Amino acid sequence: MQSGTKVSADLGSPIDISLPVHPSYDLESRRKALERAVSSSSKPRYTASVDAFGIPRPTSSPLRFGEWCGDISAGASVNCHVVSVCPHGAGTHTECAAHFLEGSATGVYSIEDTRPEKSIKLAVLLTVEPEKLEKSGDTYAPGQPEDLVISKRVLESAVKSLEESYLSLPPAPAGASSALVPFCEAIVIRTGTPERFGEKKEAPVRKAGSEETKSAAKPVHYSYTGKNPPYFTKEAMEYLVSLNCYHLLCDLPSVDRENDQGHLIAHRVFLRLPLKDSPASSTPAAAAGIAKGKKEKEKPPVPTITELIFPPDREEVPDGIYILDLHVAPLLSDASPSRPVLYPAAVFHSSTFSRPF
Image 1 (cartoon, one colour):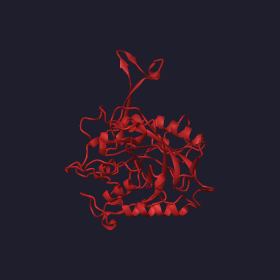
Image 2 (cartoon, helix red, strand yellow):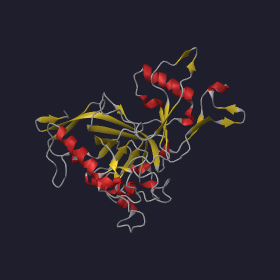
Image 3 (tube, one colour):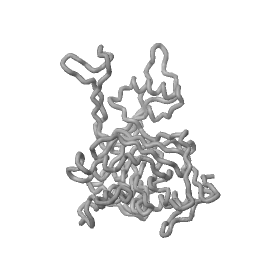
Image 4 (tube, helix red, strand yellow):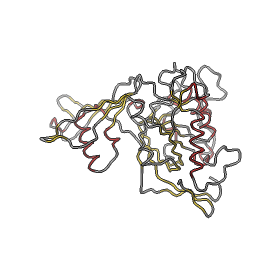
């Protein structure tokens, strides 16, 4: 952050942009969650569930020891359930280089190595419109011309538009392409999914007692499996890296193509990893930003990618600079369910402050 620049956040107005995991898809329990959400003016994300890549849906079942069943409805004094979930296709999740390093899921390269205790970050929220790969001028093997992608051009346009919307920002740092660079440690990308790119499967509203649940909202499920949703191009990821972005959050099931033959170009570029089948120019640890032998303050951030977020519409939460609090469950694994929370922020520079029109 440049000298004379300060950021003020409204910590009393948190914006939860996570999509909860819904084990077992129990429509009755989800209906109750819906009723609570409506009565408390909460977001409809509580009633939405997703699947992607054909990954089995999360399940939850009572723990059993002999005749004992860990469910109050079965006479137990407590509810004690065993939950089975693959974070990569069930809801908002955060992943790191461990997703791609052989044998590392429970070793030194895990989500815990991303230093999740440093969860507070400056962030920029951008709304983008995917374009066809053939018109983008970008590359992605094995992408197809008709694929919808988030290209470098799309991102550059969104960054420029946001920069122009602020009344005053500090000058761009030397060598930086945008005055927003100091605020881009995290970038949140909103495309409008799952409504746009997932197959909507609306659940019927059952009767609650003698009356039907009176609400326009209904529990709904979105399936991305086999839909080839939009993804990021190689050039788009290189552009994000050039903005000194280390934490990417998006409302897509993956930053890569649904079927990319295992190349995972977008993931690898953003996580600072060598591309598949190419010689590594550095060790995986250095490429992932995990610098050994340095003092804690000298270590660069460890890159993370958070997928399947569920941000409110642009009319409710505009593009802009925010404070991000990225909550990640403490699992020694390649990924973890997560809860990213945004806080509205204002930028102060010298005697002025900046906020979007």
